Image 1 (cartoon, each protein chain N blue to C red):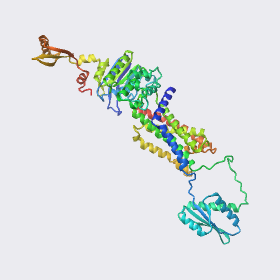
Image 2 (image 1 turned 90 degrees about the vertical axis):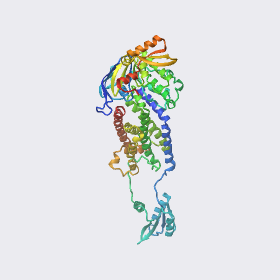
Image 3 (image 1 turned 45 degrees about the vertical axis):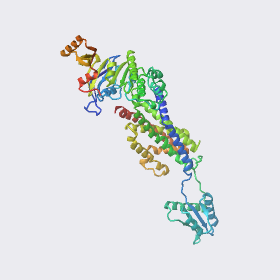
Image 4 (image 1 turned 30 degrees about the vertical axis):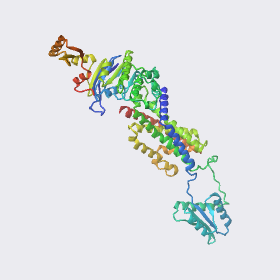
Length: 351
Length: 284
């Protein structure tokens, strides 16, 4: 049985290599790495330029000036100007900008915001809140606030926006592409009718399918290791990453095998292949907007998979998400492998 | 070695049978031919026997293995040469055979020896993509020999081959048979059936019309003729005389007595003529 499995695997690797599968996988990984490292910005937040004029001369003058100076030091886009007119002039030149005038009203400090008029209400609200927070913190500086941090020993770095896209690629390329590739591979063998020759040999279906799945795992891991190493270097938890991608590839390959078993050619099955890919891509929305996670998204396997991959690529110590995803995918892989064998027995052999 | 009893098969799972009430037995060491036109049910019967189609109704066994639930051991015993050259096009001829031999758990043949046997030794390392139809056919043929099959299924083994290659293939089939292999040959080629088979089954519209040896079929259904070339008034004439027709016999005797005959050959009916006589249709 093992001799047959390794014989099949060697043949599948040779055939896929000569059909440029390896080249495609490596090429796509390198293109994606280039996009992440050189095209997608590290910071994708579109923050407006802020021009401020400080005209307040009251008792809190020093304190409030410090707030603005601190903001100016922290954010490159915050600039001090000499007059209200200068703010308006700058805002006319730069449509993605707002203005602030720190003045006085009824002997109390008053902050005036000058807006272009088309700003998103959420942006305005967050800006007001942020300024209020900064000023409050200054005013109540004498109040001691203690913050207790759970897992205080973990020093969490903010993940740049471009690198944060990597887990999505790792879900898409090694896992979802494996789903398409294995179907393409099966259709090639159906076209050559080589599976008929295999069927009249002592080789059995479980070995035949296992070899194809192993090939997809190998391709998936090559893609994963190349892209992860070139994007985050040694920071990733590679052991977890390999386990997750292996299980994800097995599951996706099984799905690809099941779909391919029902059709004669890739053109007849393409609508199903695309549909599966679209459905399994829906959870990507939750990746960027974690608050958006309705039940129909959470039940899709790619939902937990992408977060487990993120944890493996940018470890924070939250191993629970990895363990639960691994367990889920072990079960899903076993079930889908059994279904793939049944589908092949029924669709490929009997019909 | 092969036993088939009341075999039926319907692709539409109803009573529209592609093969219907098929019964035959193939003895050990025999070359058994399944002769019939396209769509007669030859391939369906073979596909059921080799496990590519399920056994829906009836009984069939190969070397006492029930083919309803074929065991792995059965596939170590059989070899199948397909009409369609179903090889891995991205692998060379040698790689195809090297791969296939790993599927068996019995002693296998040396792939290079097999390739040499059918004149493919120089193309052994060339990708099958670049093989001609005849080369692919020869590759499929030798692939079916890799496990030294005891029961060998051959589907149109000389289809698409030039006369020399076809002759080589027939020679190999005869040699394997001499070594003890039982051969199940499906073909619509009456000449190869006539030349190789110990017994032939005529299959038409899913039913076996008759089973017998080529010699018996010719004796039973063929009309014995004598083909004669003779000179009359200085001109060469050709004529066939029936050996069972009194008038023809008299004319032939008179030609012999006058010494006008230049050549004389006995002629038997071909299997195709017999097939037409039995089934009312040709083998094409």
